[in-house]
Amino acid sequence: MKVLVVDDDVVSRMMLMHLIDSSGSFDITEAEDGADAWRQLSAGLRPAICFCDLRMPRLSGMDLLQHVRADPALADLPFVLVSSAGDRATVQQATQAGASGYIVKPFEAEHVRAHLARLLGGAGQALPAEDPAVTQARLGIDARRLQAYLAGFEQQLTAAPADIGALLERGDHQGAQARLERLAAGCATLGLHGALAALRGLQGTAPAPARLQQVLADVAAAVQRQAGLVAIL
Image (cartoon, rainbow, N blue to C red; front, side, top):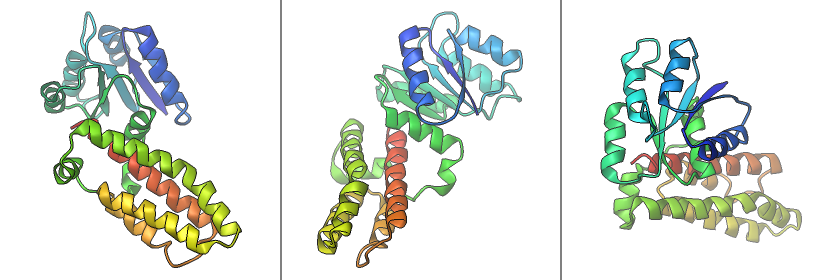
């Protein structure tokens, strides 16, 4: 699957390309600025998704986005803007211009993966979740704090399969259920109601290792997708 990465800063471009490459099997094409990207797109390049820096010489990311949306052959291209500017006015401008997503530098790997999954088909199997804006209002926090909570919860999920699996192997079903209950509580707090339901399905049983791994992987994917949605508020 082809991905276009556009950034006039070579270090940022290489870092983003590395994160994309570590997220799956992708054919990555790079462009040194918006003008270079538009030249390649006009010549027939058809990526499945484009990650583009916002502020660049010759042709900015916003200008490139407008060119893309005005071209019938490219109008549906998933287009994620990348910038160090995270203020609400800039993000809203990007959204109104037709951006599919928005990532704030420095890059967070989970945000890149979430956009790839959500925009390239993962969203069709996503566990449902509360609108991040509703979660923020309910908890009385801002977007950055919600991102931090989600990142911390994802770290817990990374260790959970091995830890819970070890408890089950030792026959400590009560301990395994307690760990699952703590994860379920985290899902409830963060508005991940689909993930909460999936974890509830494991409670009161001794889940097979394969089922445990799959459910926890689905919950982790839901956290990553939610983090990606928070990034474009």
